[in-house]
Amino acid sequence: SKIYFEYHNITSHFLVASFFKIFVAKEWVARLPFVIIGSFIPVITFIFSRYIFSLPSAIISSIFISFAYIEIVWSRQARGYVLQQLLILTTFYLYFKTINNKKNPVWRYLLLASILILGVLTHTMFYLVIASLLSHYLIFNLSKVKLLLKSSYFYIFLLAAVIFIYLNRIGETLTYFYNGKTFFTNNLWYYHSFLWREYGLILFLAIIGLLIGFKNKFKETALIFIYLIFHLLFLSFIFKPYVSRYLLPIFPLLFILAGFALTNIQRLFHNRHHII
Image 1 (cartoon, rainbow, N blue to C red):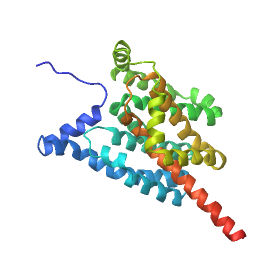
Image 2 (cartoon, helix red, strand yellow):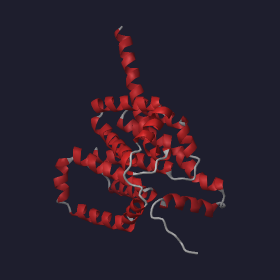
Image 3 (tube, one colour):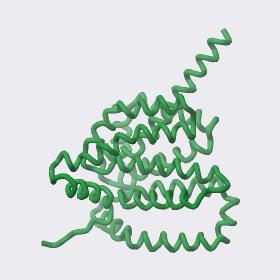
Image 4 (cartoon, rainbow, N blue to C red):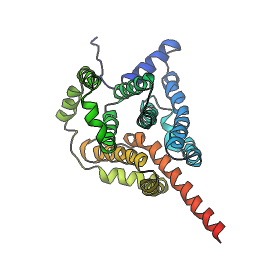
């Protein structure tokens, strides 16, 4: 029989195949690695939220995500969406750790690069994460870009990235979807309806969290906002298939923003109580 190699979802398939090899080829074994990964989502949510916002925000957001129905359901599926969440949050955390420190150990750069590679191997939409990081870096570190262009390491990294993208067959993937007429559409009605109907309160709090974040934590909130915009625009107007699972990568960020909003709302009432 002819062997077909899929150039995305590699890490998900590798995990399932590895667990089949270790245990036995059964459905519960296929789900097991993602159950384990899903258990770490509240942990990395707590770590990331605490780093960019505060401890109370981290506690609230991790509680939200621990009991969210959509998170529980997809942590039990043999699909790589919770793995995407883990990689996105880890990437954002390492990115901020890197840009906020003038001197970084080599292992931090290597770890960030490894996570980015794993993200692309997990799902093609991870390129939206990379685009968000590049956009954010250009906006907030424009002065450093000129120095970066003079560094030989930049061009070595750029060459390695081009080779990796070529080997990852992103061109073939885009051609496949384009020929299948899966590009350019209007799915805004579906995603708006799903988010507002199923998670209206979380979405409302997340919007409040964004507004407060722009005032108090502009740089950190800007990255979350850029990624949310890129992801939602891609799903709403570029990628034709519409299913709720494509929203899963942004849910931890919505919970983090909602937790940040509740923390600030509580602080507002607390301050008023003391004034009275």
